[in-house]
Image 1 (cartoon, rainbow, N blue to C red):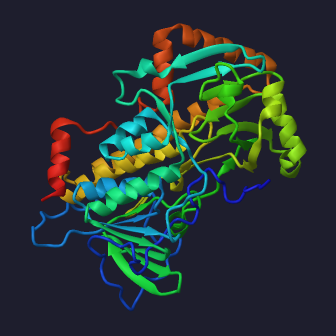
Image 2 (image 1 turned 45 degrees about the vertical axis):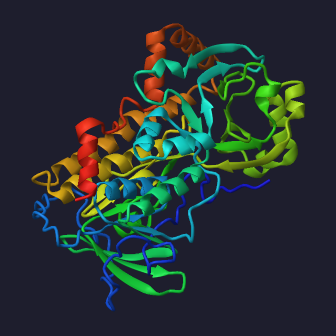
Image 3 (image 1 turned 30 degrees about the vertical axis):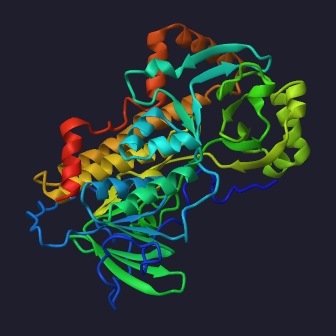
Length: 476
């Protein structure tokens, strides 16, 4: 049984960054041609100050015959692809830069909340994603004896979202869908196998130096760069920004089984929080397997936790009796749990989104969803600035500040609340009682699901005139 603790399997590809010579998948207009001279080696202030900076001048009105400036998006995970697609759909040419040779296929994030599905629907990929996933219509809290203490039905969200359910599906299913939509815009230069090696803020843009796998270099210039290159962001490093995460006192053990647990455990919901003084864990039903996620104190050796006999014993404790004995363990691995938040989501003309800007506990499945929301809101605001709609960058800075505030005031506290009190018998009982009270009151239940789904803090889909204007901008 493997222990992929480095890198964190729940985080986007940590090396996802970089431009290079266009590869065979390049489509749409190309970025400026490579030049013989690269940018100067960036120091800690390569992107300029990270404190508030003077607003950039309003972009001049665009002559229809003048080539549009190309925004670089670094990282081809869900966040980078979403940002690139939002920009391209707004008529902004993009160069998508990704270190790896193809989109990642490893098991990573797998939860899509209603707020995110609404935005993906606007981008034209939600229906195809839904066909590949498992619809979660309810969430429950239960104990090891099979007693269901509380259950909330996602139908309470009808009227608040076009997708009153949660979807369980691997993020690797989403990325090809976004990539195909991006290529179809005709405004994307898609470069895999390209790594950012240098970056230099020129005052009116960013000059990037990149290398391909053969070491061939290229220099491109962009008015802005969106850094969606993961938890080990190269752009963040080049900017001299902090990147050390604070680890939680626990790490996670994820056990994968292809045994259909809902056939073995009567009434088991596809999202179940098992809360019991003897053992607590989360159970997630995926399209073709189940995941059991346990919290393990950091002082417990991972090798001991991953020993086959130890995994078997934990599964049989989590599913007492015949169900536990019937489970076939397909895989077990651990991953770290950490928290990180950039002081500011921009450094000069480089804008940060997703894991490059923040990490949270995986509880609640919020971090990737929040990253996709970053991409949508940042992409919309940046497209408006490049069109010259606002008089300055104030709306862009406001969007970035809002995205950071959402993580600080909503995402982190809500994620941490999911697992609070698991090691305290008295607090565990209080939390189960609180869940029962929430389930018994429709208003409280709806409020819980709204917040658990980030519907109260996510950007909303554009509708009516706003959406029509966005489409028209893309065809001017």
